[in-house]
Amino acid sequence: MPDIKCSVTECHYNERILCNAPMIQVDRNGVNKASNSPQTKCETFKLKS
Ligand code: SF4
Image (tube, rainbow, N blue to C red; front, side, top):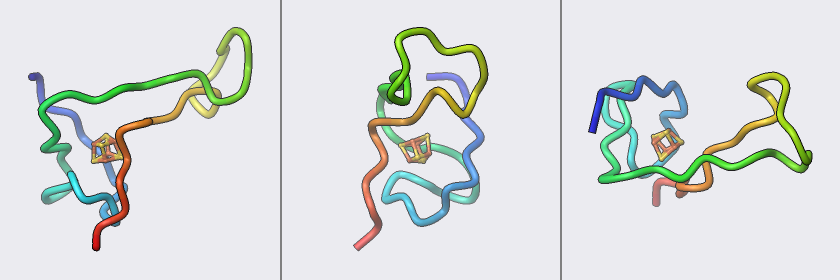
């Protein structure tokens, strides 16, 4: 998987500002057609325990 830089450090998969998940799922964020990045979201996010 290519390096995915992610600043969501409270995510279980985040390691030093990089995503360490084996794959991620990104979906539209409640819209039918995204036209900017806030209209997308990472579904793989899991809160660090
Ligand atoms: S799973 Fe999503 S939110 Fe979590 S580190 Fe990876 S890209 Fe970021």
